[in-house]
Amino acid sequence: MKEPRLWIPAAWLLHLAAWLLPTVKATEYAGRLIGWKAFRLAACGVWPCKGIEFQAWYHEVLATVSVLTTVLFILGSPWVVLRGSRSLRKRSAWVAFAAFIFNAHWIFIFGSEWFDLTIGYYCWWFSFLLLATGLFYLSGQNRAEPIQN
Image (cartoon, rainbow, N blue to C red):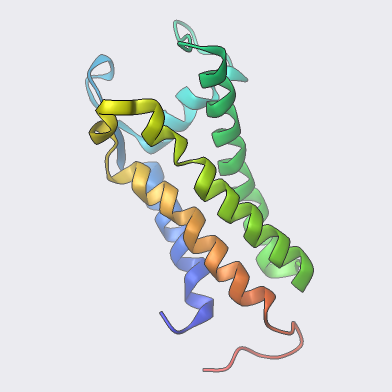
């Protein structure tokens, strides 16, 4: 993708698709757990769910931070892209990249069952990398200059 302005819409579309695609094979949830339901379960640490308990306190913390990265992606990235300064875009790019690295923890939490993670998880995860890449491109451009084709 040579066109820098395509990275961010691609990240947003991938993130949107992740909400509708299966994220994990979960036998206790009758098959596959789609993205928005996985988000809801991850949010159980701060938004209580009946009958849901985390195996360890740090799983609850990791899930809650993942929820925060998703909320920042959804609420923060449009504002940063449309209204943010170059320095804010660069800092946000680093935050998105850190979220990409951090959210890899799900692969490690699943351990030997990491293959239960499905396309929705990977779309969600890679959307952070695409967003970071797009923001790095945008932070290198002067806001007053139009994007060259």
